[in-house]
Image (tube, rainbow, N blue to C red; front, side, top):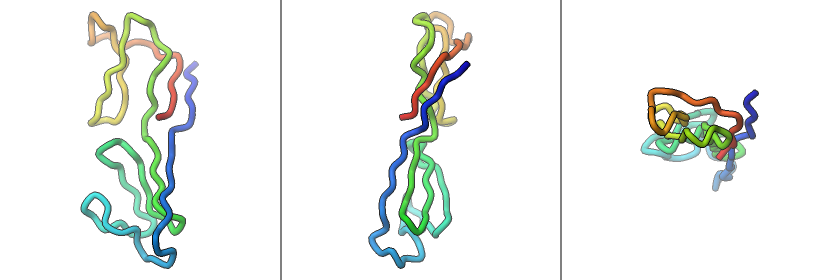
Length: 98
C-alpha cells in the first residue's frame, strides 16, 4: 500500500480584489479561472481569492536502500530505480508532498 501526504500549497491574494485577472505570470495574462503548470512543476490557478499553487508531485521516502529517486522534470515525477541498474524500477512504500 502506498501512503501519501497532501502536496504543499500556497495562496497569494490579489492586490486588487476587484481585478478581472491575476496579471501577467510566466509571460501570459492569467484570467480568472485559468489554470497552468509552472516550469517548477507547480499546478496553479487564478481565482477571485488569489493565485493558488500546489506542488504537483510527491517525493518518495520509503524504498529499498539499494535504490534511489531520480526526478523527471519533463513528467514532474520521481522514478525510483536500482542504483546499480537504473532500468529496474523499485517499489515505493511511502511518499510525501513537497
